[in-house]
Image (cartoon, rainbow, N blue to C red; front, side, top):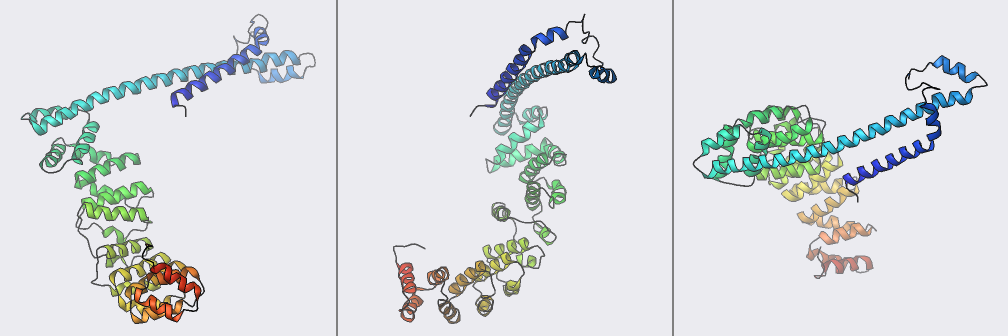
Length: 408
């Protein structure tokens, strides 16, 4: 694939060739037009529309009118386009040269700033280094300190953060978090989150309900980092959709930042189904069992995704009291939830749940039979072979899933 530079040159050459072709084709007409003695068009470009219409209606001058007005106008347009293309091409070259020059200067600035940071960390001239860093471009200093801070640990990381605040870069970051452009806010809000600039918490709280998903995700991440005591309180009022991806990121943030984990049972009454799903997943991952009976109330939730997550939570928390409810709801549930109920009943492994699963084998549906036999314990598989010895499909499935050479 051609690079951007060669594509621009190719387009320029094609347009230039087109212009030259048109000019060559109309060379005879152009000689007539630009002869100011006959048609002084160049000296006076103000066309009189009434004069044009009157002249065009005369039977004896249609050809002259056409040459005088139409061809002249086309020629003028071609000349303007040609000049514009040349100016544009020159501007593109200048822009590229300016960009290369800026990149070269920035590289030198970055190298100089890195030397000053190293001087601050590993020499006795820290005061001089700080004084020199104050005179450097703040954006570059912030980027370099952040890159170093996230890659080191211990005492040096603490020194880098102290340098960040001693240079008053937190004020610069705070200002940039209020920038008009959302991508600038995202970048510097993320920096504030990493460097623990607590005053940015109010800005993050303002954008937690933004319609921009990237802005919203970044604001939530910053808020969680900067307010560890009330990190998840925003979920009580959160109305936006929390994707699976964002739920995983939130959990990773809890682990990486060692955030205090609240009781997620408080969010089970939320009107937002995705908040309820997230709360259930957090209950599973942190094995919060203090109010597990409250989970059973959600088996009748109107949202299918919530009911599915409730069934998984029952399996993870091993809530045997849920067996009668799961069996009662099985027939009215969607196929997706039915599969989860089968897995959960098999995991709970009560006499009642096992009999229910064995009776389900009478349903002539291969995928359900496979799911039941795959999840049921080995002891009950032998019982299934005895009871359904005349059913070749069930016998074949039992032998297949019991084969130790096959991994499920």
